[in-house]
Image 1 (tube, rainbow, N blue to C red):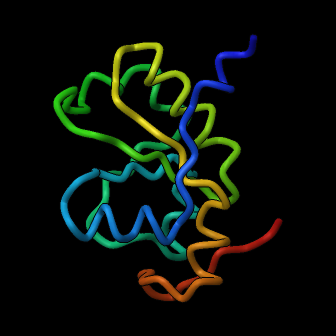
Image 2 (cartoon, helix red, strand yellow):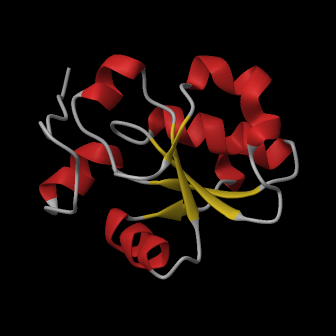
Image 3 (cartoon, one colour):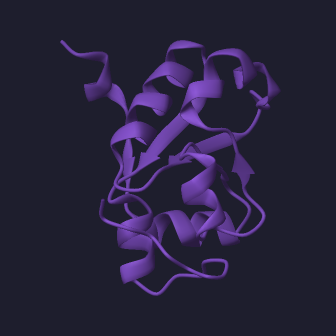
Length: 114
């Protein structure tokens, strides 16, 4: 069994609702260039490549949801954090779906398909 199968998947609307209520903390694992084009204001930013040495910055008492462009890198990040004992899920569909749902994003609000 692949340990990625154990990562809970949460859609952007549910993520937004839980985040607004303060039930979860979001972490964006995209690259700096993607972050600069638009992100969810006020969330933690740790590019996936830095997660291997920065994961200890995360509070183990919080519930986390990982975010990326489409949901693949964030799923990987969530799997790694779950292995380290964190309560973490993946936002399915990523920022592409977040933007499509017209959920809040910083200017200029560009999330590219690539």
